[in-house]
Amino acid sequence: MGRIRVSIVGGSGYTGGELLRLLLGHPAAEIVQVTSERRGGKRVTGVHPNLRKRTDLKFVSSAELEPCDVLFLALPHGASGNQMERFMGLAPIIIDLSADFRLRDAAEYPRWYGHEHPRPELLDRFVYGIPELHREEMRTANYISSAGCLATPTILGPYRPRSRPAPPAPARRRDRRRIIQSEVGPCDRLSPPAIGIPLRWSRN
Image (cartoon, rainbow, N blue to C red):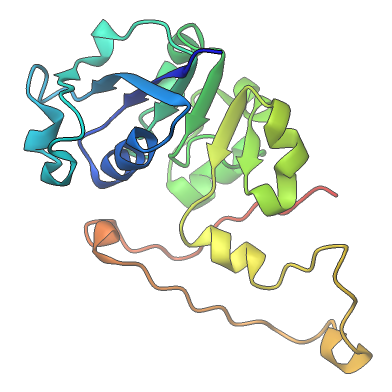
């Protein structure tokens, strides 16, 4: 069986660079294209020097994307929603690392992200990418929306798998508020301050 042909849309940023690093070490993945609108034709290692001697790939524009097996989207929040139908025509499996398809309810996007969702009819087609909650759904999903860096620990911290025994009754008081403190590293230093974190809990 041949390797899985993978492309990355938005490979010049921190997320795209880390994704590229991980995929270069994956024995089943073959990276065929990496896009950057501003750095087309330039070597990927010019932006990600830690990948020198690991790849000779050059950036291409998104207009040059060719069909592949899996398409990763590492675009800024709000950038993939308007282009999703085009991306769906390029690959049978799409993994979106942005927030554009994380919420199931389109009415929540103005509250949390400050804009209407451009393609609300596509929201139900995406599986929320936390394996601890949706592992079986992810195995057969065509479209996966990766969970956010703050939402993931916030959800998994109080999450109790069905295999774990329930805590003693006093620890299960429903009137007890949980305070969760999450910290991010320098990759989020340019992000605007957030008032809250939208979460999508398991439907099980």
